[in-house]
Amino acid sequence: MKLSVFANLGLLGLAASARGRDPEGHEYRRQPGSSRSPCPGLNAMANHGFLPRSGENIDLATLRAAVGDAYHYEPAAADGPFNEAMSFNLTTTGNSSTFNLADLAKHDAIEFDGSLSRNDFFLGDNLHFDPAIWGTVAKRLNLYKTGPAEKDKYVTVEAAAKARAARVKDAMRANRDFNASASQIQGSPGTTALYLTTLWDPKADAAPKAWIKAFFEEERIPYREGYSPQSEPQKTLFDIGALFQRVQAVKIDAC
Image (cartoon, rainbow, N blue to C red):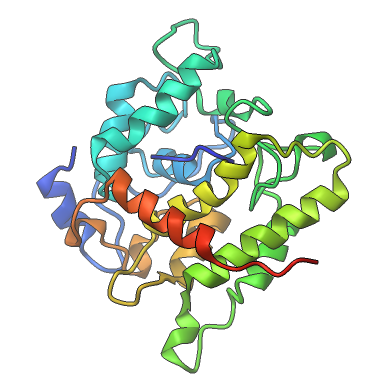
């Protein structure tokens, strides 16, 4: 899962700031049979209607607006992933300037082995959320312990980096065809940096566990848990890069 997400509207920002409520017109709703990707961040935007709820025929302008409205990213954050989808010729829409979310599941293009929440292509379903795979990551994140100390409510960069590395090692042991390409080597910590940036609480210098849980397990933007991205400065590619460097800097014990 390399991709993953990445026109700020003022009125939408005000609506999204109400704790416990989804933004008006962007209520969470999953539609069976809709096109979805291996990336929870994209799927969450479709489940809230920032992207077409069908998950189909997404163009660059739509993706740019969605990452701004849903997560308060600068529009340019969408360009790299979109251009990769186009350069790999993944689209099945019949239009070379649009894609369906499910198109991104093509193995070893944008999607790669060692996903935090999907199985490897060689081992089965690399598209849909896998509770067993995610369960190993959630356990390492200590995701369901949220007290009594305030720090127990958050996932730090160190915890996220170590959980990511352990998941990759699990995948390498289980999958004899594991693809440790240069893309995967960079993409794996990159996806961790991306979800941390998306769900980051700068006051805590960490990501709230409740937000991570909703994001991965329900593919829901955690507005109900207090997520209010428009209350913070707009996220940039620099922010993602800075967290990427922090993830990369975490010392991982060999095993």
